[in-house]
Image (cartoon, rainbow, N blue to C red):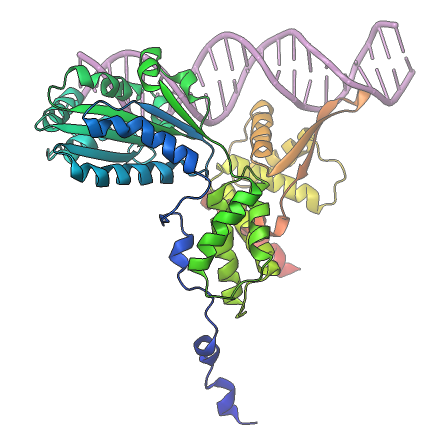
Length: 411
DNA sequence: CGTCCACAGGAATGACGGGCGG
DNA sequence: CCGCCCGTCATTCCTGTGGACG
């Protein structure tokens, strides 16, 4: 045996490995494609609503609804950039400002962002809100402007009294002399108007567009166009795209999810050194995405919920046939003692179990056992192996972790 | 057919922390 | 900067309940 040949060239496979991607950036959500298939209606309608701005009239305020991954943001951005392009032919300014309320989520920060867009120098913090408001007004009114403010994820700010910004913005036109402003609000939540001030709603919600989820066929079409750009020719099996679409359509037709799935499938294939993406890679990618989500969900859980979950795992591992709230509570209380954390009451634990149920980590079902009481039958919905270590990562549970490690060594 | 188990889950209230207006 | 108010988490107390058992 020539020992040299064993190690030389360990990088060879990486060099001669067939690339799969032509340009994987095309499959990320930050990428804006040139065309948006199956959204022609929405584009036309939104364009017709804001078109009056080209005649220097105030365009309508618009509310856009739709679930995640239905193309709301991308359509709005597309229409806005087209409008700005068209505005080069007129002799006044059309300015669109995009604000994501998930990131910019207080009225101060929104006004501050707007004021800075108009050449003002407002600090991130420190000024009274009305001064920022005046500053924005002054900046906006300094020349003839048609201003369109896009508030993405607008439901993020109405919940917590941030709707006063909306009130300001929808009334500002009466205070502006040279400029006109309108608002496009984008929301995932169809019911968010319930929490909205009626005065705001009457001006903001005059025109609405609802984005319906894509169906499997439409998703397939979208993926096909992107895949042609993203993958090298002939590097994916013909079943891959229909499968990705079907998996994403099963859960409300989320295009973002479908694209993620396709990209991760390609990455899985790449890692396996396969020359083409096949069905098996998609299945694997789907599992990976799902388990990543679960791990993420568990990591962000409060310590008590983690302990509770660990109690369920303990009972499952003991092959307990019927897991009830009471049993979980006993084990949980024991664990609490072990890691010196005060246990919560049973009432609260009952709520935490319901929360875990809602997250899809547990499955609980109310069961009546006649004279032997009424309780919940609880089952774990996720694989134990994946989540066990993830729970023990919690710093507050380090003593439990150490205990389990020594147990393993003894065995 | 009434009892009674072992909880579910609603209401009221308290503790705490963070943002907002003055 | 401070007090106030509000939302969230948690406790206490409570009433409700499906159905096996006697």
